[in-house]
Length: 181
Image 1: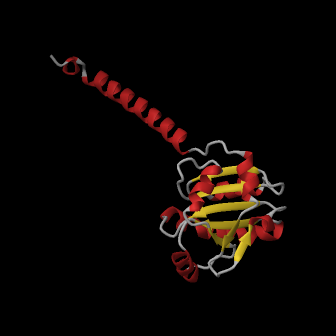
Image 2: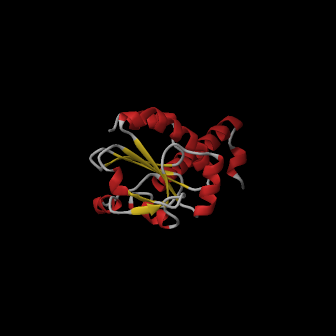
Image 3: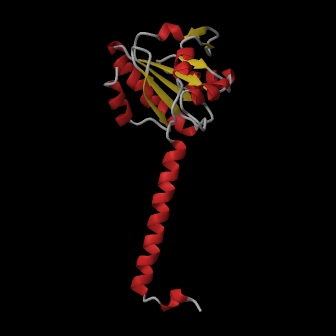
């Protein structure tokens, strides 16, 4: 005997709504836990400043050259649609705030050819370096446990992590971060 048929329609509606709400809250909580940046090791941040990367133009970029000023590191790839969508916003932020000391570094978790091709079509004012697949490991050491892209890390002028975000950056994020120097 199906007890659900014995409920009046109004009670059945509220029962279904309560079950759906509980499932939604549970799913949102699980997603928040799974995708929020996790703790990072201070040693990983110290090691970051010792790294250097190839650039798409064939040069080298040493992280130590970026110390002493606020820095937003954005892990991205040419094959990542949300990464590509946020790059123009990051470029505008850089153009508006570089004179105020802000730096941005795009670390491409990608191969040099696709990055060069992309930058030829959509040049960026801020520097881009090639992290390759090692960039996934680097982003994980900075709290991106799942290795998802895009992933952004904001470092203060003192070199400490001020904020991190997994997912596409918004104007609200950049407005908040600009004050974190």
